[in-house]
Length: 373
Image (cartoon, rainbow, N blue to C red; front, side, top):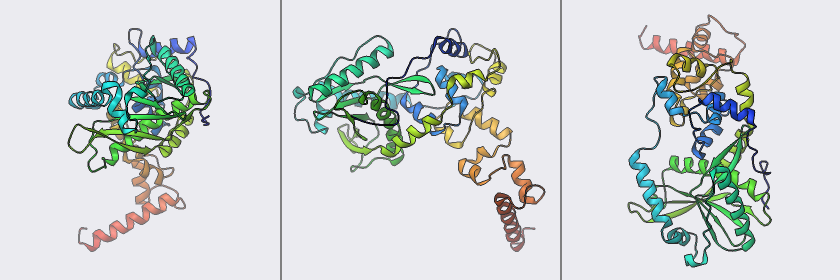
């Protein structure tokens, strides 16, 4: 049986009061925007951002919110890439998953069970998936779960995740399958894209561990099967990717997230992110929740341009990157940094201040030597 820090019963649904509060934040007519594994991996990468935690937990459409704030970003997958990805996934899973099973070393799809996972709502689908996983493990037969639904508690609220596939081995191992449309050329793919896929799959593995903890004989594999087009063709090939590092980081970061109800309780009365509200009200609502902007957000969050603009307006050193922010210690604004470098402010015993003054002196010396002053 798989053991993990996050093992345990399925996440509990939010209380009625919390559901009502999140609906108020979202807007009475707005449907909750689902939290997927890609967004969850991005959230885990920045656990100090209460703004994203609350908006994702409440199911707010961040792309629509960014547009309403006048900071829309060309963010997300292109329509062409989306269509190409769906077509490739359909090819991999065609004929009962024959190609996928071949990559796993199964000779014929006739040996494989493909259970029906349909049910009403995400809660029903998650329960149906858990039952199918337990049945498959008990049967000791190859089983392919196509688009199962997994549940994971995030900051006190359940998130429902849908991997491309999960394969149950006869020995009780469960393997996550990630199908991507980027090519694997000469058995090697783009490292950044593989890393993103591994982080996303790590979230699925974490969610699977909760079910495995309640299933006799089950073990979740900490390596995933990444399926991509081979070279420049549309033929599928696969590689086993170890996600233990991503799993460990995601588990640790998710435990650091502030619970959503605590963030919501600290908001001013009447705060809402209803997209029907005027832009100035939405701006005030967004600014009432603290953010933790970093340049990395530009690749992962729809509100990144808005947060970057605010960070620049405030002269926050976070706009320069997490590495720079960490080196500057107690200096939180660019104005403070420049003043410390000039010797106009700052404690000379502070290592960051001393380093800045030394760097400023070296710069002045270099410019003087070059005849620039």
